[in-house]
Figure 1 (tube, helix red, strand yellow):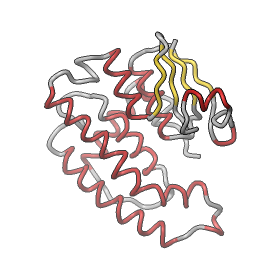
Figure 2 (tube, rainbow, N blue to C red):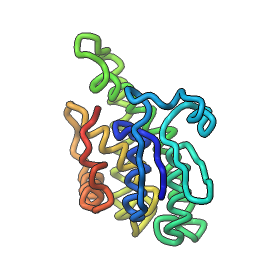
Figure 3 (cartoon, rainbow, N blue to C red):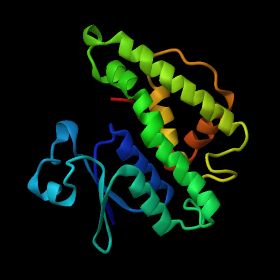
Length: 207
């Protein structure tokens, strides 16, 4: 049994839930973080001193935090050669896009998400939204061009790289704002939404 701490309103928790569902892993999830608390409890801090979610505990006493590291670990342990590419070129293309999601795409879109979803309308900062939209849409144009050349993030097959990027797109396209047509990105995202493992993740409302 894989244990997971984290609330589904967290994009980083959704990545882990989707991965576990893709791998058909029995999962015990405990709501934590935000209104659920737990993350400042001494026991939790002993497992994750950052006091953040997600956190997993796998059989054999394996404890791990950081969402993309958890996705990599689960895919490497339970789907080597499939979701976790064994050939180094394919593996590191997947790693590259996973890092890009965390270091580039997520920071670009964060302000718009916070303003639209977690800030009362009367308190929203329109300048922050505009800057976030401009930064993110430039990245989505890059992503659309990438997916014009291949069906999935790392090539011909669905891998661990698709999970964090798709979770980011789910969050961005869930914002109440207009968006340009991105035909290749839309084709890719729709294919992922239809995967059984994505149920309860890519159809999850934002909060």
